[in-house]
Image 1 (cartoon, rainbow, N blue to C red):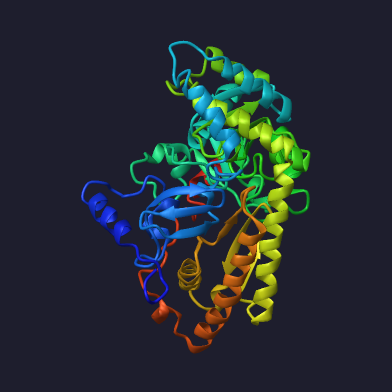
Image 2: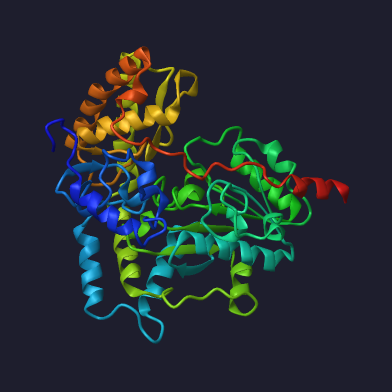
Length: 444
């Protein structure tokens, strides 16, 4: 740490300068990149991690609440999972024929995921989302998609966002968006040529007025398949994901992140009659789809989560942070300005724009939390090995930072207190860019 208390990040900055010459952009994952942190204060590169802590390349230690942007559910370097990876490594990683772990993992998923009549194993969330959409189109004979949430980088989805360059207009017109907890916004898009509706069962906001069941009813009535994108909800809110938690079984569901504790793997589960189209009519294969280290990690992680009831522990830990933050916001008369919301297993800190620029407020809090040893991105993605000491230290940091936020707002000087470039807005903001979608349907 420097004399000011902020971390020294010289090695991070040296690496960043090297990367900037040949990498465009420098990050492989937007949420991990420098645009999401106060540039000049936050570290840019992590070298190692253990449990709920990380160490940057300059040797600074932080409590981490990003958890690899979701995949770390048990904790970094979790022995049971690492032992399974090492044991499999001795036998090999990728082979010339199928591996027995493909069968073992699929049987385990069939047992715990309610809709898993069929299973496909892949590597990333984006590809199983696209596979689910392709299978839906094949099964229904329809071409259009309606979505709500974030579903990866592939053309069919990113065409609905502000970063749609490179995607033909003809492709963009095949997908429309609707609003969460607004059933009327879905009704207006659900035309007879919609193959599927894909949504995150929740992001942070809870479903209201039986929203998910109403979505399912509309899909059935329209002959459109319902896909749950459970990248964030799967294995965190319950072992069987949101479909177990809410008691709603979608036609298809997709998973990644939490169930292999950091190893790259994804799942597509769903109705047998839909997934059987992959046997001949629909192509979805990958050289690394049967990579054995990730499957070994997934089996070990899932078994550990079941044995130790990890979703319950994640909720308990997350609730302490959520309730503690909100109590401190009230203590410093900030309850109308900032709040911690969301399901206990994964919460978000929000800032009210009526009090000032939310990105400036977020940047200031981030800067001061990093100073106090918390790698903070505005979320609480908790893991099983976050300790009570971690929670206490985090709440102590909030107890120091929130009055600074209140004072900075009162004096209108938050922007001047930033020691670097503030956090930028993420690209995920989407709008109803497909007005022609509905207009064409009306013209029918």
